[in-house]
Image (cartoon, rainbow, N blue to C red):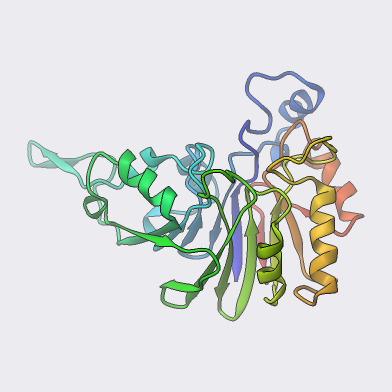
Length: 284
């Protein structure tokens, strides 16, 4: 299993466009891996998790063509994780003077899009045409139920601690080629039920959000800090779901939670954590 990080920032981007704080200013000055697009990953060669508004540019930066995607998993319908306009760009070309025009003029294979029932309903309401015209097949998933939406790829959705009132947010366990990856973005610390389900699975890779970074808010939030991820890791190790050597990769980084990558990555490495950057490829 090879995982390409197309974007690794939280909703405000990194640096945040309207902010001149120390972290944002240093990221602009240093550039390179300090610059983060909105969070999304590809499980190569043809599985995509989340569809943020800057996805086309993020994918192109690293040579990944969305035209080859066969399975899309959406975590939840917040705008930094799902922009239906990107899906509309799959519409077929029209013709002007016998020449094809439109956002695409070549064929695109059908893609299966999976998400919670509420997220699927939001997508259906947002699209100006039937999904079939976009060569999309929308499949609602139920929490705690394994599905195989694409041959050779099994998916287990678990309820995220995010959008709790609506119940639209999932984290995912994805299995491919005998390897299992956890993708836990966006979520706060997991519910007991979700944690129990996760502890029954042997994971080869864990990708977790670290939106809050080093912050320790006085009230629980629907995102995780680095300390929250460390607590999850200890629990999974103690229950045998991961080993001490299982890679734990942090993503969904806020400039107001962690310093720029060139500073934070080494600090986190000393704690046994990998800080993702845009373009990182992890293979297990």
